[in-house]
Amino acid sequence: MKKAVSALLLAAIGTTMIAAKPAPPVIKARIDIQGKMVLKPGKATMGTVKNIHWGKEKDRVKSLTSESDPLSKDKWTKVSLSFTPQADGTVSIQLMSNWSKSSGKKDLNAHWVIYDNVEVKGATIKNGDFEKADKGKPVGWWSNTLNYITGKAGEAKVKAWHNSRVGQTISVKKGQEVTIAYEAKAGEFEEAKK
Image (tube, rainbow, N blue to C red; front, side, top):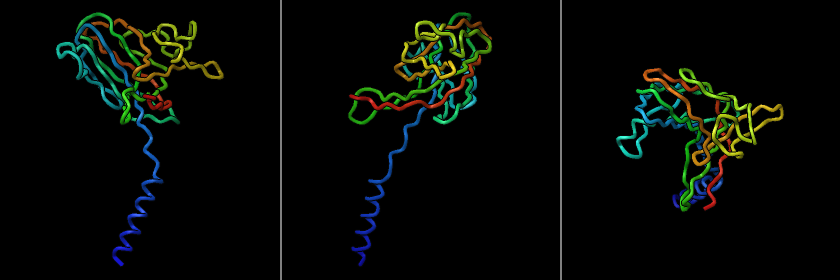
């Protein structure tokens, strides 16, 4: 009797495991900020903002990475982060995403994030709503035509992931806190082919 019940339980567990769908991939907005001066991280309204932990140790204080909490495909999420440059100069802002790797594959999976309405306080950003375009790219941003999205009403957005970034260089002042605010939502997940 015990063996029969055990066998039934194992069969039920096995069927449940086969029928269970894998969890959807987690997609997060990520912004990297790089300069030639020390960048002191401030606060993020969700997720984190901190100095990077890779590359040459002496250069880590000159770059920041900020990652949001997981995003929804169904609604826009407002996110902001701040930092303070310790000298005058320029920094690059790179819109991207988190990434993952599938077992047995060497390439990264693409976690696409859709960005809109990028605003900056404490510095000036160009075309933060992405409405101005030239040759299929948002004016003032470096990207490729793959990153630019226009809607039925002409409303423009950009999509980005770790290996297909959208960026802009801005001027910053020593000791002047810079706050970057944006709206984001999860885009498509594309598993690596190899």
